[in-house]
Structures are given as C-alpha cells and as structure tokens.
Length: 314
Ligand SMILES: [Zn+2]
Image (tube, rainbow, N blue to C red):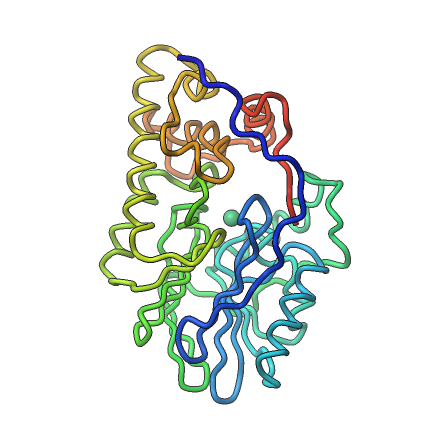
C-alpha cells in the first residue's frame, strides 16, 4: 500500500524548556517537543562545580539553558560534555560557559572542526544568533570518568551508532543514562550518519548498564523501555530494507510502500527514508563508515512528507 504523507504538524511554538531533577544534583533539561534541533541537555550540579551534557542549537536557546542552570545554583559550569558533532548539541557551548573545558570523543572533535557551523546553511531561516564553534580541549577514545563534586559520571564511547563517535554519560550511582542521540524517546531514531547495526550493538551495551532513567538527546525523560523500542524500530527498518532491495525499490520507494504502523506516531517519521539509506548501505556490504551525502536524503525526506521541507524548530 502507499503511505499517505506523514502526519503534518502545523508550525507552532513548542512548549518552553523545563528542568527535571532525576536524582540529587542530576537534572535533565528537556526542550519540547524533541523535533529537529530541539535537543536535551544534562546538568550535573556537584558540591563545588557544574557539568553540562550538550548545550543547544541557537544563542537564544543556549541563554535559556544558562539561565535555567543559574536559577538552580551559583556554581560555575566547569565542564561541557559534547555527545556528538551535530550542531544542535554544541553550537551553544560558548554561550553556556565560554571558559569551560569541553570534552568529547576524539573523532567528534575532528568532525566538529571539519563541519564548523555548516548546519546553519541547512536551515538558513533559523535565528541562530551569535553561535560559535567551540572545539573540545579534552578528548578520549573509549572511556573516561568525570568527577563533579561528589557525582561520578562515566563517559563511554558506544559508536558508531547515531554518528561514528557517539558517547553516552552514565551515572552508575544514580542509574541515570544520558544517551545523546543514540536513543530518542518518542522520536524516530536517526542513523543516516552512523550505523544501524552499530546502534543495535550499542543498545546491547547500554542495556547491560541496567539504567533506571534514560535521557535521550531529544524527547521526554524515559525508562529502559526506550532500549526495546529503539531495537524494535531498527530491526523493522532492516527488514524493510531487505524487502525493498529484493523488490528493486529505492529507499524512498520502500519508505512510501511501507505501513509505518505504530512508528507513524513517533516524532519526525520521515527519518525512515534516511534510515533506509543507511540500512541499504549495510545490507549491500558497503564499509561501515561510508559517508552518505545528507542533502539529497533531506530532499527525499521532504518528498516523503508531501513536499514539506524538514524544518529546524530551534
Ligand atoms: Zn544528533
């Protein structure tokens, strides 16, 4: 059957961001409704300092994050952890804390330097404000431990998943997981720039941590059920890719011919087209780090949406 254009959402002002305390000193800063560019942050307030996990896409949104932190504590943000290279997660670094140490995976730093502020050109109508590229000054490959005045956070590389170099921030004492965009509760997963099979492997590793609370890179605070939901979606994408390849369909045709079923209710369902491009590459045994040009895929996602361009909501 042919899928009608995905649910059309009229442009509207999203609800304001909110800070949720998940455990003493451990906060999620949630930006509804989690659509494109509306990412979440983590705020760890220790006895003597603050660490932030990701910032925001625009100057205005980064200022709001900074104000939300200042309303909770007079302590300084000394550390920013950048989970991956996408601009919505780090363009606001200098606004939130210009003197903080920025920590990331070493490949994330390379990708940030390579891409700069180019995401602004994907969405030229967005009011970016004075955003700046703030490259990490401390990088690692597999694992590092961050101490924030009594709080302990493990920084763990789990990529390739959403990108090639995703890290998650795990607080074993509180069983809180900040998953970056590897997990997107209530939103459609997005593996175009990473790996579908790698994300499934990451999910296995994250499940072994046994998190009680999961803060994804977008979407509301969730529990461990988001691990199962993400796995089920990606396995369905892989099955859809195999059937599409067997039938000689392009990723866009395969997406249009598929019944989204329960996944139609996820935010940004057009990402199916992009995820199928990655799944096709993997099923065709292309090397895992094969770069898929994103501009044509974004154009196809717009076609899937009945011609409505993929919009940045920041
Ligand atoms: Zn991302």
